[in-house]
Amino acid sequence: MKEHLEGAQKSPIPTRDELGFDPAAIRRKYDEERAKRMRPDGNAQYIEAKGGLAHYDDVDPYVEPGFTRPAMDEELDVVVIGGGFGGQLAAIRLGQAGITDVRIIERAGDFGGTWYWNRYPGAQCDIESYVYLPLLEETGYMPKERYSFAPEILEHAKRIGRQFGLYERACFQTKVTEMRWNAETGRWGIRTDRGDVFRARFVVTALGPLNRPKLPGIPGIESFRGHSFHTCRWDYEYTGGDSSGNLHKLADKRVGIIGTGATSVQCVVHLGTSAEQLYVFQRTPSSVDERGNAPTDPEWAKSLEPGWQQERTDNFNKLLSGIPVEIDMVADGWTRGLRYHEDLMRRIEDPSSLIPEETAALAEIADHQQMEYIRKRVERLVDDRETAEALKPWYGQGCKRPTFSDEYLPTFNRPNVKLVDTNGKGVERVTENAVIVDGVAYEVDCLIFGSGFEVGTKLARQGQFEAYGRDGVSTSEAWGTGRRTLHGLLSHGFPNWFHVGLRQTGASLSLTYTYDTQVLHIAYLVAEGLARNAKAIEATTEAEQAWVDLVNQPGPLQEYQKRCTPGFWNSEGKLDGNGFFDELYPDGPVRFREMLEELRNRGDFQGLTIART
Ligand code: NDP
Image (cartoon, rainbow, N blue to C red; front, side):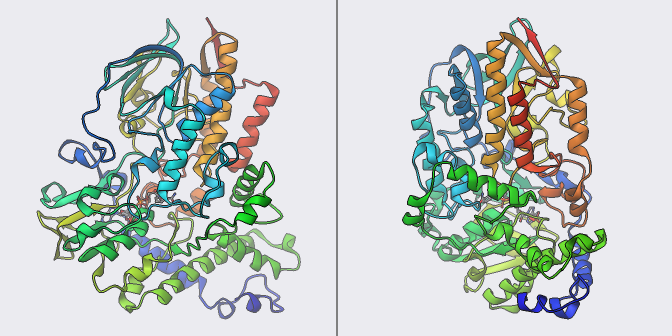
């Protein structure tokens, strides 16, 4: 393709012959496929894991049952809710700002957050380990491979816990049931399911953007009598094996898995190897790019200069935010589309002469090139033509979470693995022993839900507790028409409460970068608040409104998403502001980090009120 495009062309837009595809035909195909998948109920198609379905969420297969401890009653400077990387980083940055009177409350039995819960076979981080794993230089740890598997990441979370003294401050297996602001004392009262009461001047919630499993509202789902679990509560008792596979207890089992997102792409490989029969129920195929994992080169590791991790992380984030950089240090599947774009631009003598329509056409062509590459890869790796056709994703790369695997597609060449494509409609029905698609019953002994996590639902539903701010007003009441924050961090009516998350921030694909950006600012504000003996730090209504307006401005991402197949990135095609990447700081994660840093450097409490005791 490259040589082809470097020919002496007059028009900046390559022809169909040069490209080897017709962009207009691809666009039409995308629209057709999108139409097949659209449904009126949007997010309401999913059901909460509660009542008769609570066991999909409310179990912890990784702890000994029966843990008890006496209830606690404490006054603290800060309570951090959540012991994933977000919560850990919050506690660490607070510690570095001199604040150590901190308690971390975590529902799980250890640190790790998503990596505590997601231990399914093959679980791996798709972001390069040298970028994703926090505090590598500080802990002196070098990941074993370019893309770390879940056990290594979980171990790193524990390492951070040990090295930064976080275990002494953690309450595990403890669920917050309510937090309530007391204006008189200037403290949050935090209650838990173990009868604890914590009274904290500040609260940081780091609940994770994808923490609560969701289930598809397929008719009959409650009636299934075989064994069943969600991928984030993998039942190794039943399957045998461990996160590296060898699920030997499935050797005589018929297994079905619903969903073909990033999680299933990783675990299907192991289910396919181990199960007697595997049915993969697909609604929308993922785009599956090369994994290309490799052990860390010890010579490269030795050559790294202090500060290397921040430099690499900044480089990755700048590229993905469209900020020019000299080299692409990571150069993996996340930025392949950018390389296609660079190739297209290289053949243009004077890029400044491009009119906006040409610029847009070139961006679209680069996206098509990337997706054509992905579709051709399916043809190369899957033997059966019909199966290969069904596995081809027909949407733009930025529509759904890209995935990366060298083994997923070839798994469909195994005689015991069948792709059951639902042509965009989803599973029709579940009975006590089978999954029905298009009137055909696929009998299964075990049904696994790789159906993802709650996105776009209320904070109280995702966190499973309500927060009551000033005058006893809950977030559900205050944010009836949508979340309201300043910088994604603080809200009017909810003093001294800081959020760590994606919404209304400059979010990065590498979540640890996003979290670190936020907790640096939170630690600064808490330290200043304590130093000034502040009773309540809070966003003003004006600043909050201005921020909400800013992050809700329709931008290029929202425009792009309009043509996308439905999914949790675009609020199931509803584009109602509840998608994963809705309400973001328009200039991206790097500028967001710089903006907060500038505020700190200036000592600027812009948009905040600080009430003194
Ligand atoms: P997803 O939400 O991405 O996937 C859910 C799957 O369930 C989709 O394939 C969806 O189809 C399917 N589904 C939903 N309802 C039905 C139905 N009625 N019938 C049939 N299929 C249905 O969840 P995942 O757990 O796969 O991934 C969630 C996120 O977790 C990822 O996007 C990523 O952000 C993160 N993750 C990160 C990893 C990492 O490397 N860091 C690894 C794994 C996950 P449809 O697409 O049509 O909606």
